[in-house]
Length: 438
Image (cartoon, rainbow, N blue to C red; front, side, top):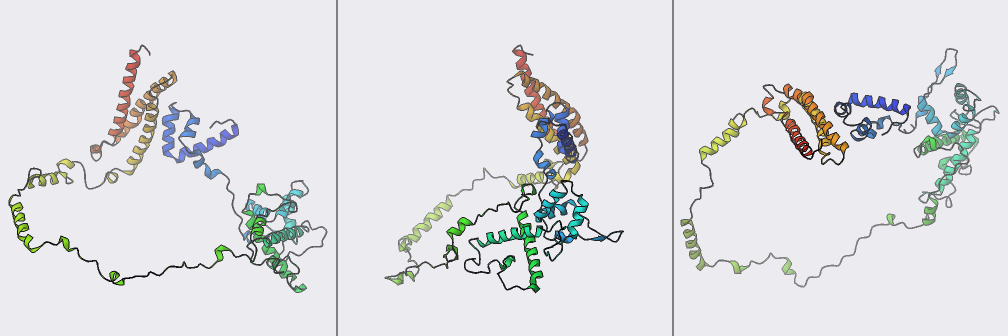
């Protein structure tokens, strides 16, 4: 992970600082490996830390649009008697994603400098486009007068696309009212001027729901503002050619039971009786005395083999020694080790083990050395391990040398690991010295 940009470096430095503060294990590894000069900082962050996983919360996540986001826009009375609408960034993005025509007007007027943002939203809330009836306005100064027409065209395209769906409940060629649910077919029902308000309200609700569903298909950045030039994919055309309304679909067929053939038995008595007894294995009366005499002879010649058994006294002593508090269980109780050792000691021991394991991994992976750089690394890692023993392992050993924990030798295994590495290092140094190399 190379940091080439100063801005990226500043941003990542804050992330690294947060990671080191929140994760004690990573912080300890950083001190033991990076500060000691064993591992470069870039290699440490790319190898020892799952950077993508730790920083995934900082990535921008696309959220959905609430179906009731307009209800959160509540007007308040201003000081001058007017009405004030308070909008946040999430509400504005929801409006743009649900009503593309408003986004287009915003880009045409605010981005070009024709009006400021406050005037734009004030005009929007005062327009007929925002009112519940959504009636077409004849006012020539209404900025959003043509938005209703764009919505009607888009909704009409959605209705036509839905009518071409192969699995439509009512096909358009068989029923003239297939588009009644969309409220865009004037000839779908006998409407009068009294229910125009209801029809426009239904159209508004249907368009609102449709655009919220479509907003989940992609992000805002990929959205084309021009609704007239947008081409909707007709994925259902090929399916419409394959299936028709009168087709008999396999999934809708009634399951038919397989025909089975009746079993015809010539002699049914064989299936109504239990198996016959094999009388060939039955012992005859004449063989009973002979078998009884053989059993008596075997019992008379049987002897107990006690060579591999223990006497009761020795068994009792062993059980007593292995009982908690016995001679062989000195310093232990019925509690487990995790219950005896305090939690802070366990966490510190785990941290030391992680750092020591990384140092030893670097040490053992350098053998056999294939270049002078690796030989130099062996010397450097060995010095780091010895310094780690003095500063970490010995300090931890003194900390746990209490009457309660001294019998467990918690630092003994770590010392054995370091001693084994020292033996290997001394053997390697002796081998190098015997060859005349330094």
